[in-house]
Amino acid sequence: MVKENKVMDEKIQLFKELINESKNIVFFGGAGVSTESGLPDFRSKDGLYNQQYKYPPEEILSHTFFINNTDEFYSFYKAKMNSLKYQPNITHVKLAELENKDKLKAVVTQNIDGLHQKAGSKVVYELHGSVLRNYCMKCNKAYDAEYVFNSDGVPRCSCGGIIKPDVVLYEEGLNHLTLNNAVNAIASADMLIVAGTSLTVQPASGLINYYSGNKLVLINRDATAYDTKANLVINESLGKVFEEIEV
Ligand SMILES: [Zn+2]
Image (cartoon, rainbow, N blue to C red):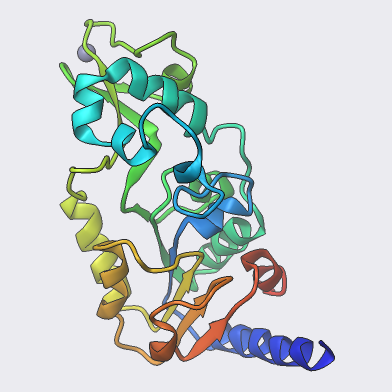
């Protein structure tokens, strides 16, 4: 145990040195970034996808289901996807501080909860959209998350149209502009931190192949298929790693 701690200390020390010598850091994060704020992970063993519902969550969160069973979609969505009551954790905060110091250029995230922005991050590429943005399907009027989560039944626009969250559902493609921005940020990064993701969800996981530098850091509780490509692998909780970072 003492020896393991020493190895971990050395890895975190190296992580700090890599951050210090980098000027164009990009952070690529998955569900693990948000679970440390208390949000359930969609895909983990004890996450949403293994809970009991009338339909499996991956079916409820599909485009077809949204169109055909809008009422049931929203009862699930409002019960399980409301991130408004959660707060950013130390990782979100340190990333925002690194951006503020002009060392970090972008956060690319698979999360839809808006916690990076809540922590103060400005450049955030949300591959799967955000619960914070919602639009009327008829007239395109924008609505905030409070309006949607606090509505009774299916949230409706003043024009009568149904409001849809700007979240990428199953069967829907990623936003091209967001994807392009993420690719460009990763391709030009001098350091890429990939954290809180098992890198199993495509096409998001393929994004890290655009990184061509020699400071690829993977931080995840468990091993990933990309560990052999990384210059540094830290199997530790994100919060424990980021609380050591001095900005
Ligand atoms: Zn409308």
